[in-house]
Image (cartoon, rainbow, N blue to C red; front, side, top):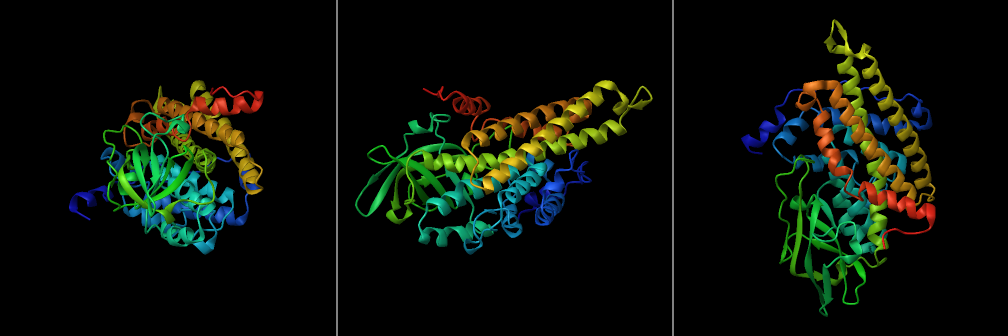
Length: 405
């Protein structure tokens, strides 16, 4: 690492190093001893490896690539994937807790982990051949390889069925053309799970590897959000993809949407991690900040804000826990996952804004995590389905009438 890069690890400890997790309804009683140990392990990792440095990473728009290997070492990649493929073989509540703790550190860091697990490892495990599982999953789980997921296109975001990326059967290989954008991890990714249409217009998943001729990953610059995460495009210019790289076990739009369900579940937990961090910082600041000769925590409007924050966090904790149980039982529906994702992110963004008010002018500085979380959550409320799209998914489930067409 260059001297310039080393500067990213010279920051002082952040103000929220002594984080206390809000648990007003004693949700911990619903967790197993294994859940608590996993959460404690990830929380300690975040405290040591993310919290002291992330403000500087974001200020510098710097993605700390060595975090990828560290995530692999702690089991943050593909925790629900069976152990035989390098995963953790854990339940969905464990997965949720891991995402919650990482996003308490930073949404961009959680994005790196959830893309790897839910959008790269998940489809290879669910839809891939045994050869594909054995080739890719262990290296992705360990952090030796980084992956990305290519669905969104320049002109097709909430309407993925209209995608233009396509591939043709050339006999001994497929010829892939098109472009994807807003792709987390893409500038550094070793592999990409790409969704494209065949000559009949059927959507399939293809595994594209870095180094294939005609495949490039331009980086997206000048972001105001997720600045510690790398984002970019996927460009395919007559890329020759081996036939064995086609995911064989599912096709159609339902395949990538299943991946999004897995990712949205992780986001539902993760966003509440960011909300907890904002709440905890606001609670501490309110107790310490003196105005009119008394702490601002004594003011009615400050107490109102803190009370509303804690109420919404508690509701989301219970919603996420129940959703995790349904995920483990195979009973969770897309609409139920959408409800949790939308609720958690909206809750977290509202809490970040209220926490910023409590912090006053200090809330916009890197001394506190508030503005960073707020900017990050402006992306999280849009990706993996916008706020309004999730309302329409739920609306279709309620009425039986889809509003998309």
